[in-house]
Image (cartoon, rainbow, N blue to C red):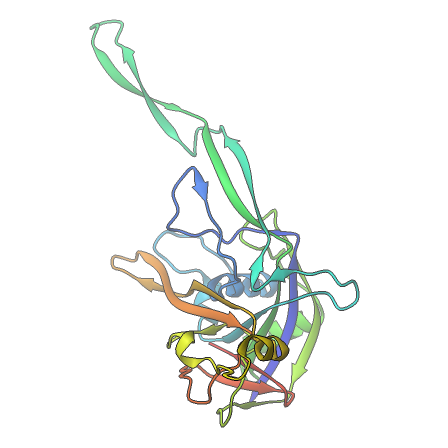
Length: 284
């Protein structure tokens, strides 16, 4: 039997580092991706993280098949605080120095006092880093648990009781996260028979432009009335893949987040769920 729950996850700051960016500028993903979310669950549950080169961490091996969904939170209904604009969270840059010598081993030319020849000498140097980070990211995270799975039961219990074995964080250990709003849902697998909207981010196998339900009569005015205003896209990690000799890299998929109505024949390959008879989310 399956159980669908959600929590609202918050952080003051976050840094979900993109592995394809080079020093001295490090960039962050905008959306919370699945490997990072599983890492947060691992900390909450007390599963081990990365310990050994060439070996996937315990939390990932145990949780990689868990289906999750991610929905950026628009605003706080009580305070009116807005968390994102059209899917984009606010970002900033910070510049700092790493002078430990461990981050950057530089080389300099020195003269050998005995031979007079020039040789290379390695020396610890200061590494100047510019790092992008998220400001006040907030996500509604969905988890589709198997009720007969003991680990899923433990995660569910910890989330429901707001208890974590280790401090969870969003990309860096100084960016701690917290959650609230634990909720369970009645749900059913959704098969579109008419135009529909997806309230979470979803894997975009077909170009969104081909799936939009365009309003041909007074399109601008009608689209605004129906809330069809933005489309957000990002290529995000969904898993780790072994590229050989126990070297792991992210596996990526194209994601979209939009308030556009979609045609009933728009192709969505991953599972869509209708929750509480109203909203539609994707779990992957």
